[in-house]
Length: 59
Image 1 (tube, one colour):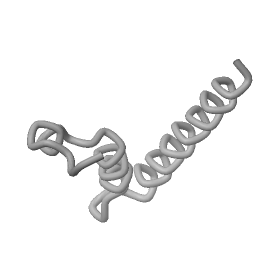
Image 2 (cartoon, helix red, strand yellow):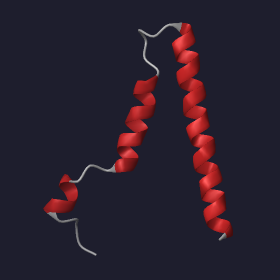
Image 3 (tube, one colour):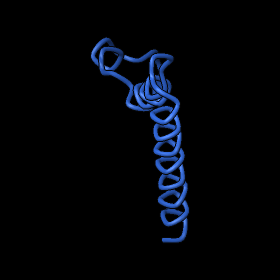
Image 4 (cartoon, helix red, strand yellow):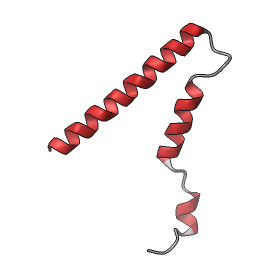
């Protein structure tokens, strides 16, 4: 395989964007309660993904 073509390089990488979104969910100007909720939501998303991955492996 050669280097990716220009058209592929211009397509945003969804995994990279998700990582950025996770970092931006908890920001310094949030209240402690908002931070807590954002962290809990983030953990919930990670748990759902692990569960989906596990289900995918079973089938």
